[in-house]
Image (cartoon, rainbow, N blue to C red; front, side, top):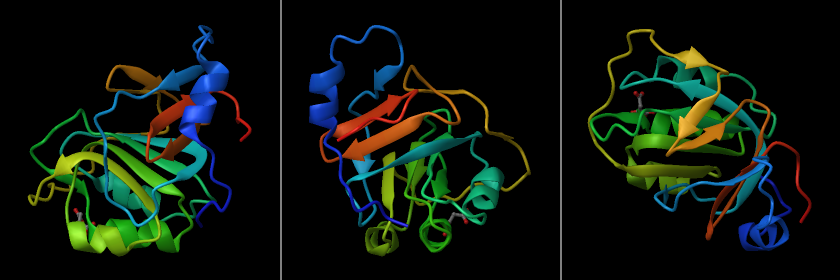
Length: 168
Ligand SMILES: O=C([O-])CC(=O)C(=O)O
């Protein structure tokens, strides 16, 4: 499922720039855009894992219901946590997007998927699936806390996260 209503992260930042409550957060500008969808948003689900994408695969094989999967891969640049197969599963199962604090691979396949995909970089090496990791826990993405049930908004300008759903 892709979100037809696009919400500008710049507009959100204009409206919330004085919010020091911690509810409104902006991710550091280190993410590259790989999916066919640039702007996406939805409630957050999380996976925390390190060079093992067992739980990422399990998540995207379940119904996404318009959610955004935030994967904290510890910023490892050594293995790809999402490739063409997982991205295709995510799109087919109705995820709005995937944000990976780590690497992805299969650039051409990712670019064809109707899904938002953000990651730090491309890396052709896959992971070892050892069954390790945690699902639906609070994660720290580039120093910013992201929790299951937060709302994430991404567009060409950046990625913001909020405890509450935000209006366009
Ligand atoms: O299966 C993996 O580990 C990642 C991958 O290459 C894919 O999703 O196609």
